Image 1 (tube, helix red, strand yellow):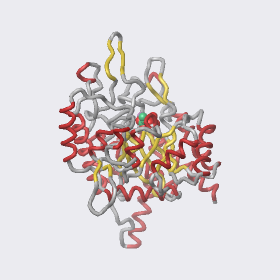
Image 2: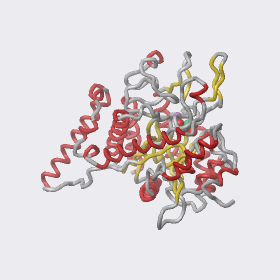
Image 3: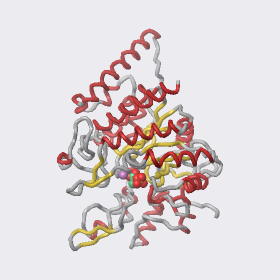
Image 4: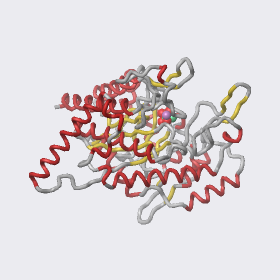
Length: 449
Ligand code: PEP
Ligand code: CO
């Protein structure tokens, strides 16, 4: 079948909202078609090259952010905190691994969510489920749950505001390695990993200053960092509206994000999401759980990457701590025996979600760490390589996942549970994960020598 930005419409598209007002939808799409892109094809190609480096073990991906971004929470503070925590984590990872760290936020467009049911019932009332801020509203009234096409524009605008601020911060002094104090967090000082982090920062800045004094010149020329964006390419009408050609390049680009990914619930081989993604030039992520079989996975990589190009596909496995050691090897072997080029990334969050007795969705920090450790172990044992991690996290001091150094329990969850969908790691937990990954890569590198 010939691909076009709308060829997905001839396939089954799961998890799509049903709009009742077609002319309002058409008007919103027409406007989206006119608006300037959020990212450029140069950036997209640069990310693809860097992901190819990660495939070779020369770089490592740190992908993280909210499960679901909120338009109301689009504020200076939340953007700065998320950028800070990713900066600090990547600092730890660079120091520990000596690899280039590719920072990718789940940010500036992570507004559409797949749901397990299309309706939600509370008492006697049943309404359409909340599908993310770009589609409807989380309040439980008929009006709020009605898919609203104007939210496509609100989401797009907030993605643009967010990205504008991130670009300014990461290009200028904020992200300068000479001034890590810019990324301080006030509560970090008392956290267990905070102390370890500060002594590491001190030692790096001291040696950097020392070397620059001795040499009489700057060692690190650039005072900025690269920071890429990603979101689940779920709402295909929206994604299509930002799919463009660019001068002097062949092919189509999704210019709403650098790195779109296909969710685990929409990865059917015959489905609309694969059809849409196979035709764009962006690097593509695909979430896979323990249910996929090896042949299906190989077929999926052939559909999305017929030329078997490096950097094109990132497989993000999210198996669950109790399943990964049993289920991941057969997938790695299927990819290896068919010589498919992929980058493997571990998402230790989505296979480990459970509900507490009071009905709160949470995750146990111990299981998250355990799945990550197993991921490193399995890849090494199979002669493969884990090239990155995918995390739901925030720089805020929320209480959404239990466990970690500050030993949050189920009774702490009520204190600061803010996520509208999945539970995120808080600042301390995120830093602890960064140190744990860095230790594992160090020991892996040691083993390889
Ligand atoms: C997510 O990343 O928020 C998500 C829904 O993941 P998955 O597709 O792996 O279930
Ligand atoms: Co999630």
